[in-house]
Image 1: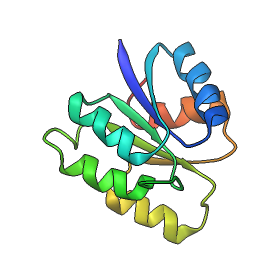
Image 2: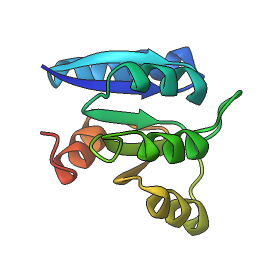
Image 3: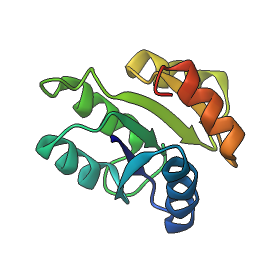
Image 4: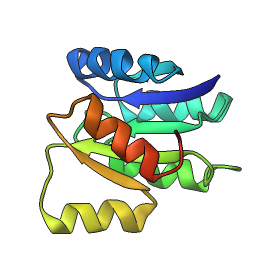
Length: 121
């Protein structure tokens, strides 16, 4: 079974993402900030990461930089999922190694389309 790490400081967003992704046959791992997500990735890399930008302790952008420097850290498909919608944020995320970008609020159709685009389904 493929795995997806859902990284968001909102338990509500993590719960919604879990429901959507479990219906797509993903095993879900959750983290409420980038630091906890990085610790999980150091133990074992997921196939995908659904990543919030604005979080306490370590934000999504910093997490992504650390992830991509891990051995094998270039493998997980990373989809940023955030309220940041200006072109500068999107370009910065993609330049840092994100594979795709989703705006909040999101739904099943949006997540499905983006995961198809990056080859996860």
